[in-house]
Amino acid sequence: MKKYLIAASVCATVFSSLLFSCKDSSGKNNTAITEIVSKIEQNKYKIGDKIDIPLTNLEGITKVVVAVDGQEVPADFTIDGKTIGLGNHTVNLKFFKGEEETNSRDFTFVVYANEPAAKWSYEIVGTYPHNNDYFTQGFYFKNGHIFEGTGLRDGKTRLIEYKLGATEPTKLYQIKDDVFGEGITELNGFIYQLTWQDRVIYKYDSNFNQVQKFEMPPQIIEGWGITTIGKELAVTEGSQRIHFFDENFNYLRTVQAFDSQQPYSYLNEIEYHDGLVYANVYLKSGHADNSNIVVIDPQTGAVKAEFNFAELKGKQGNPQAQELNGIAFKENGNMLLTGKLWDKIFEVKIKK
Image (cartoon, rainbow, N blue to C red):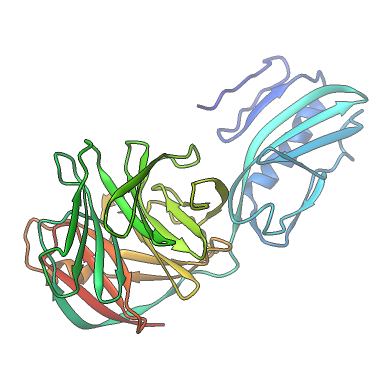
């Protein structure tokens, strides 16, 4: 919740995106600071750009202290792509006359990628049956087998393994807790399964024995998708953010998915392949859709490409089927796609 602290005698205009307190009796300084902040807020920054907080037009101000995302930076700082990367960033400015703080402002600025997302296409090269009782939430391929995590409550949250082309499981674990299952992945021989709003993550051995439960880290708003990148676990939460953790869910870092034009929010099921993250987008134009998959650089968050798979849902046969929500990759680089309650898995060849 944003809070606006306004001293009416000196502040006449409130910008909707600006939080500020005016401790200074100088209307000139308030106006000048507002102009500085508004210019920064409205700019479309890129990696390598410099942001300067000048003091030249501020009466009696001797120092400004700048903090970006809670970390103090110089008054003329560079967007380096490491400490400050793509996405939304919060800024706190404190203005001083000598040792006295006279004015402060809180606001945000946005950093965009250098290039727009390219439009990639695909060719359907194969189809396989899929059990249309599976409310697909997590999905990956290994050694000819599909590993799938399902959702919904009332016993519908399961961990399943089956041979690609089969509809009956070779292994199945039904979670006894009343939880809503989400994404799954594997790291160091263990399988991890998220839950949606239940704030718990399950860890299994290769025989589907549950060996550990983790409390959802506070950085994650909700559990949506998860994949493995090297020794790290990457988690989506339904926003434009991808959070990274070690195998014990100690927090490492966060990237935000942006191209040169916009953020890509509602990131859902994700899969890592050949240096890139593939994530479907849960909402499009305010409606559950998931037919779009975006391709993201996991180091920076830059969205490199986008697919539209809207035709696939119509090519499967279950009228109760919901949106696309399963992404996996075969060893040959082809993508396997399915969805919630779909009766087919589609194998597609990517065309860049």
